[in-house]
Length: 219
Figure 1 (tube, rainbow, N blue to C red):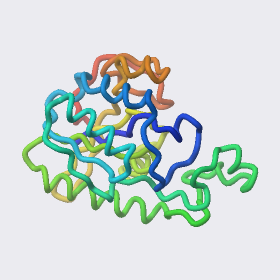
Figure 2: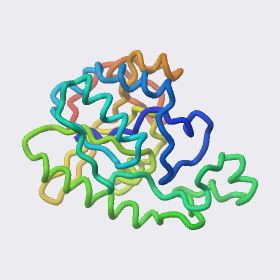
Figure 3: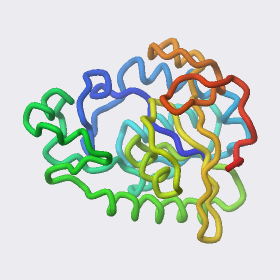
Figure 4: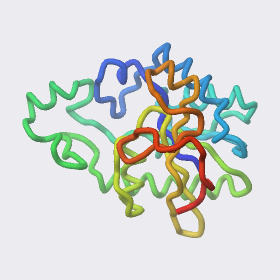
């Protein structure tokens, strides 16, 4: 399963915390999703699933349409971490109202979803997706905080996940094994001002580490 962050939304473009808000994709995000559909990292995948939030659902739909996959299945458990009172605020506004709150990782969000609740539903949802799609690789379009939570759960260092960035995850028989990180940024990268080439592997800081993609299920 390829766990992928959605493409750019209008609130991504303005630097606002989204949480469970339903900001649509930006025009650039729509173009980037269509361009990303041609990335060879998606070869071998036969279906897409997505969070119920429109920025993830629309990303999955655009890729699925270009790839001629079946209609996208929706899993509410893939949605972003609830951002509580930070919803709609910029980083500067959060730092002004809650000094130092963003220095912890993951941050404690006033009125927001707890990290424990996020990881519990994320892991349960990934296992359900694997059970529902036993015979094929699946693209699961989700959100940055959820992907970071899964990485922490599996023992990896959690780093920023860019739009159209993600990670291969093997889920089976109660096990979850992390694979390589991936960035779907061919022509999409130029649209969103990103640099990595098609199929690029994203390094610890989200920078381009190499172009060749290793076996997608290597731990």
